Length: 101
Image 1 (cartoon, helix red, strand yellow):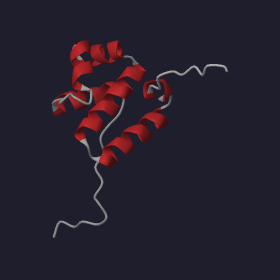
Image 2 (image 1 turned 120 degrees about the horizontal axis):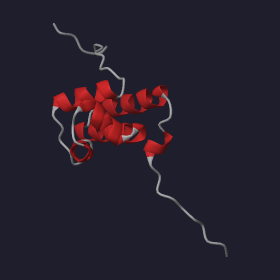
Image 3 (image 1 turned 120 degrees about the vertical axis):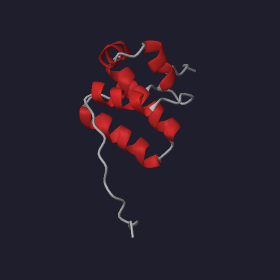
Image 4 (image 1 turned 30 degrees about the vertical axis):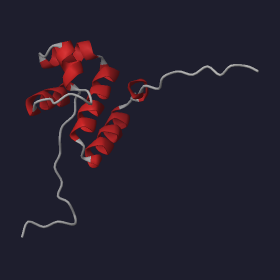
């Protein structure tokens, strides 16, 4: 009987286009779990090269790995810097089911 060879699946290897990245991050944002959002942003940063993201943000590579993990708790300023380095922006839209009144 032949052995089946497996590999660890890494989402960062499959985030090839800006559309892929936007869809992945949108799904994490819709979930609303801050740890998941940070980890998704870390996956995206790894897909683009953490060393380059580190240079573009002015933040240390190791600190980015730590902050953008499930266990991380990045400051909002870090999130904004990473978004900018990735060529992304946050956009706010109102929820359909809720009103301010």
